[in-house]
Length: 299
Image (cartoon, rainbow, N blue to C red):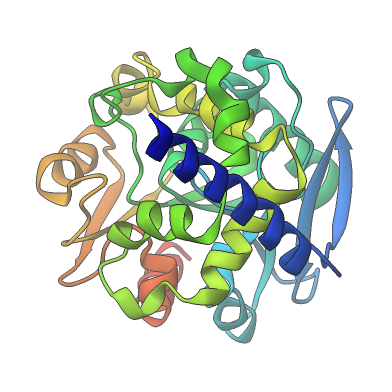
């Protein structure tokens, strides 16, 4: 018991130490007020170019697109990166219903109406893929096409819905430090070199500066535990590109990739032979090539 108390004390001290060291001079970009919530986003590239909206996965933020965005801009896209409600520098309300699949998709639809103002290519990773699928079902007129990177669309993927344990979030917040982030995130990457100290810092900072962040993270498991999503996917009509890493140990390519491509009639599946769950960070050039081939093929 004494040893456990010592470990917890060290974790708490590490949290405060890294908050002091890293949570200074934070760079933010733009904020939109949607449903009375501040939503953080970034726009790069000419506004007259084809818009593409990038949606991160659980525990992540716009940082995860840092390698892909400049490539997309160079190839003629206007890139919109968004911090979903509860993540990055967006607001983090202490109400579970704000983090449901329906609520997040509704927010994205309003973001497109307010900020992008025309249909966009939707590119989303992991949990973000679930929200993109829900958006395509609810708000078809705003979705030009879908690009899904390892979407966690099947509720079987999340064996435990952590939203049911959100009352423990405060403890998780005080334990946020680089070691914990590395232990959780490193196995997600197929290429270990992709997960750097910069990655640790950018993933961790939102959890150091806002005590509601851990609560939002846990409640967002509702988005990957929705039992109704899989049954409705076959209704999606948007042209869809599905991208997966062969070494994805979070959402198994072997178990889930082909099944999703069979559910979406107008879809094509491409698999990278070595990448893990975060292809946009591990293999951005490969992602770009797949996107360009897909988009050009739809013109």
